[in-house]
Length: 183
Image 1 (cartoon, rainbow, N blue to C red):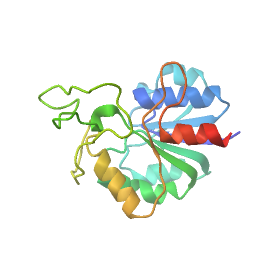
Image 2: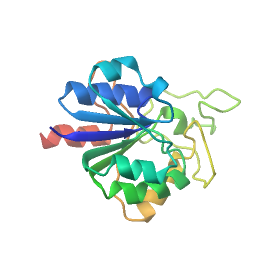
Image 3: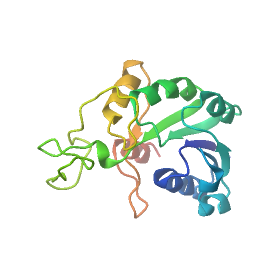
């Protein structure tokens, strides 16, 4: 049975990812700062929990000690987070970063966390402009995904970023299209 470790597995994206992987027959372990935040449906479905802060490399390395086929990072918000992830990614067969639409800007540079609400001209596609890369210390809403991607790419890592799964269960995005065609 393949094993997955989900960093930030107690949040909305981590919970959805864990449930999908569990339903597909994966053995899943999620990390989070507080065991009381473990979603009950994820625990009932069979996921394990490792208490670990995203920045605690020692605990994360221990969670990877038995090896994993898939490392999913739902809380890699900044280039600094990416720097911590790269050494851990070497202990996984595949690593995926998951982000939200908060990184995309409209034609006027507004994003979902701007003072001015963005106005997109239709569905947000992978070609949509993103916020400018930066190297900020912390960004709780994922606005430095461009900086994160720049750092990961600069170090030669081939780690795909995935925008998520649709409500109807179908995958979306470039990574998902590639995965569908490889089957």
